[in-house]
Image (tube, rainbow, N blue to C red; front, side):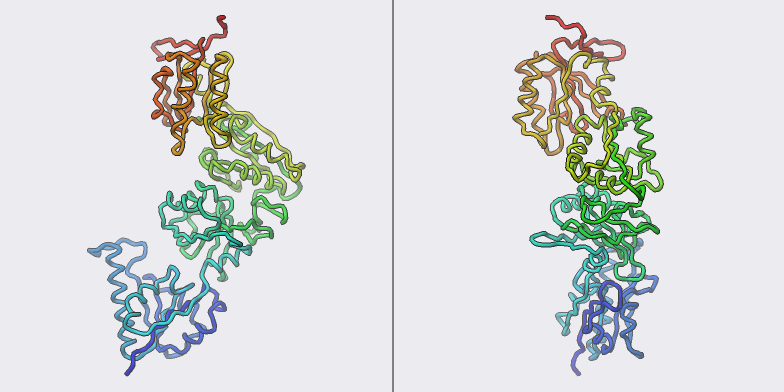
Length: 520
């Protein structure tokens, strides 16, 4: 008697009508139908294959000993799973050795994040095995979304949601398009990675694609507690140019990306006419520093747009949509805000400190100069600046003329930064230094100190204010010569004194002021 044949049968994403003709034939002809399930016993794969099965077929129900539960197996979770695969393979091997053909069912494609591959590794060297490919969940989700996933030279990256959030963030930043699988309990981390990589606004969530329970949402609108394993997040490479099939409760939405070729309606929009964009400053840290005017704007907004860290400072309100993104996509945020308002939303763009000081007001106004946004009203509401907040902690180091300079060379070359530092230092004004350092940009503080020492005395007072108004606030006063770049990060603001800046030591600590009287 010859051995039977093992078939790895791809069933597609869920709709029985998406089972291929060959898969349907093999299911009907096989002697044994094998399928996996968790301990609850319900097999999605068997449900898809049921219309093609015949009466009297043998069935091998392979039940996982653990999925997300704990186990007392001496080898832990992996040991329990490895033992299960070995036992399951021997159960199928007994049928194959007896000459029976075995159709092992796999949702999607048998070799794409499927349980079938574990059986294939253990059986294909002993028995004839053939794979019947199936439509993957990525393709089904793309079809459900209704927009191209990749085109031309674009790269699609498929990622498991179980990947550490930091690594997921890095990979999302480096790809044109992405599909994130294995969601379920991993979705909070996936959402964080989407936000930190600046891709959240472009991401879409597809649940149970191709089934009668299919749902399509903007990724930012998904309830973390309501995400099944059979869901996927897509970030299309091409910009959608046709209406997307998004649904939020009873309301249908369209893409919120910066396209004007298709109508856009958002759950938070006013539903008619043009809304507005209000750019606000929350102040540098403490909720007490947010003005009542800004609080009213936040309460009235249908949509909030901003850097994730700043969005998270705003209390969530029912029905209000939050579009959080990475801190390096100011122009994209501005376009999104203008597009939302152009289709009726009342949008608040959130900044820390004052929105006109190295923040979002300039970005929004610059983008609003495009004629396509000419009908969108834009307002700016001021906020307490980080410079004034830090100054207040030590007294009045900005009590006379002063300048504000950002050390970041992301939007301007370092040569320009150095030239401005030198000019302001020579003019003998106090200087508030924003964005002094980051994890990728560590050398500028030392370079700044060298430039300033060409014009300022080594004992010039320097105020280091970190996380002022926040839970880890610290404020110190040192001299320019003793300024240690290692003590400065992106959350630090520096105030460099002028020749008229003095330090008084008191029971309250160091008090710093720059005299209003200028001695010639």
